[in-house]
Length: 190
Image 1: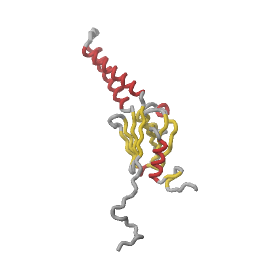
Image 2: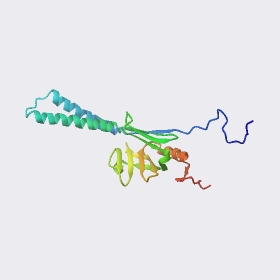
Image 3: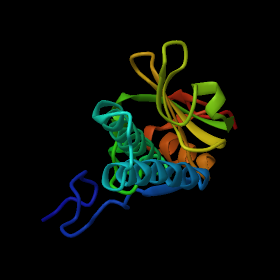
Image 4: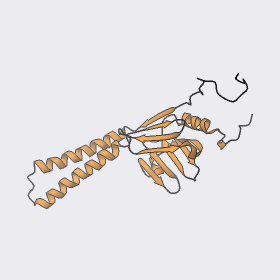
């Protein structure tokens, strides 16, 4: 006979599922920069295919390579940061950039000691858009100006990401880690 006070779970009983939070942020200006990159590539191709360039082959080759390389860098560099997708589940914070999800960052929640809402994150604070690192600030994924999520890691580093509804992400991370008032394991005052 089974003891009703035992700690064993009933067969078929499951724990309540953990809330999975997802969020995104988009920067439409990046599309304009991608268009400029495509135009540079088109110019390079046009020079290579239909050129009445008379100064010689070396200047033509340098112009074609320069236009195509600049265009590729601008096109793929901007498309990678048109948007960011953030997911917080029971185990990790995951950040994926662009349409193919690269660059990608996965931070196990066991490494996180705190989560904070940043009401205003700007590209200027981080030196531009994209995947950024600054020794005094940490690492960030900045796709637009606005609210963001800042997580503090156990090794002293921070990770910031611009994302819509960052306050909800902070709440979910704090709940998962048992954080209240930003401190692990301490109950909030009643």
